[in-house]
Length: 442
Image (cartoon, rainbow, N blue to C red; front, top):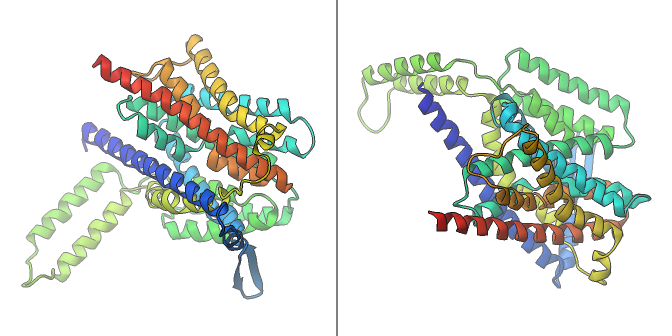
């Protein structure tokens, strides 16, 4: 397989993945609007009743009964984190995070974009339950931010999109670590041990050469996720662990794959066809061999990631948005938005994110530890920094873990919604102006 063909395949894969993320961002936006309209309509009781509907799963004496909202947040979102884990592993093995030289700038920017928002939040909320929300403004919603970039920055360099994706991936990893280390309490050591034993079984399966995604799905969900659910550790962490246990290597090398394919192709051509529209038994066997050979030339990691991308982007994240973005606006909104929690989140997402991403990027370039991506200028970086302030999905997720007080949860949701919208609009305007300048220069 030629180097040129390989590069084209990588570009095609990256392009299709980015396109899915862009489109899912649009679907996510529509779902948010639907949730907001529904929650503030005369039918809002139906919305609340739906989210509180108990759904039970029973196997023998074991029964799990939780509201729909919890199944979405703890169950379906585990698949979202599984996809995040798969993406992280792929990028570390052979993607944008595999080259330290190319990864330094977005990694540094992501770290700055997490640290400064948390510090801004602490300036307004240093004690009490409100102080638990420091992780909320650290997040970046990758689907939303890429969706905005796609709408206004079609003529901007592709390297800017790569920068944003890498930054958001590292941001997701930071969010996962924050959840695992700071938003987990009341741990059951025995259940946690069971979960780790199941995880160990996945690792053993990987090294033993097990490539069936069903093996990893059954043990990952029925073992790791279930054990973490009962342990007190947030079960979405099981998604990340399962992802890192899934093999990221092919069974046969490129040359072997091409040789086998060429041999099977010749056999198929030489096999005598039968009359009618059907194919012969021999031809059918050859086609099955082609499928098996193709499967062996593909990594289970990429196969599962490709399967999950549309499910997560067009089903799971919109369901999460529908369940969590339905904020019934009531009371004095100005008072709500001027509260310490709201100011901490709002200024953290809008001011902290931008300053963190921009300052750390400037510092790394000034120290010659990194350089700007090809054809990217600082105004574009500032625009992307504002898009980093679209916290939405992960911010809402951490909000549910950080607070138990309903008034704090409501205040936080309102602030996340308004701050994400403001950051997105400012980022869109900056990037659109840069895009127009590029047209003028051309």
